[in-house]
Amino acid sequence: MSRREQIKMTPDEVRAYLAAGRVANVATIGPKGRPHLVPVFYIPDGDGIATWTYGTSQKVANLRRLAQATVLVETGVSYEELQGVSLECDVEIIEDTEQIVRIGTDLLGKMSGGNDDVVTAAAQFIRLQAQKRVGLVFRPTKVVSWDHRKLGGTY
Image (cartoon, rainbow, N blue to C red; front, side):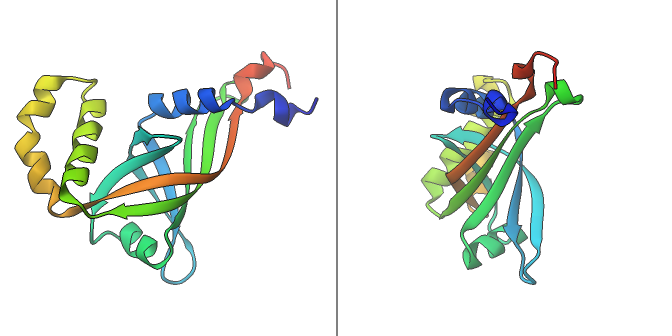
C-alpha cells in the first residue's frame, strides 16, 4: 500500500476535520491570471464550506469572472502531525440577504464557541453587515486530504 493511501482521510474524517477548523486559505484567479490567496473564517456546509465577505472584495470580483477556487485547511507543525484538506470547488455567490444573515450568524456562533448570548447581542450588527456582504458557498469537485498521524510516527 502506498503512503498516500495510508494518510488519506475518509469522507467522514474530512467532514469532521473541516468542522473543527476555523480558517481556510482560499485561492481564486486574479485579473492578471495570477492566484489571489486570502484567509477566511468559515463554517462547514455539506461536504464544503461557506463564508461571507464584502461584496466589493477582490475575491468576489475574481469569483464573478470565474466561479472556481481552491481551498486549503491545514494544521500541524512537525511532519508526523501534518493534517489537511485541499478542495477544488465551484463557488456560488449568495446575494439573498436572509441567506447571508444565516451564514454570518453561523460564523459568529462558531467563532464564539456556540455562545448564544453573543450571537443574540450581535443580531442587529450581523443584519447591517449582511447588506454590504455576499455569501460564498464552496462546493468541492475534488478533495485531497492527508493525516500524517496515521503513519504512527514513521515515514
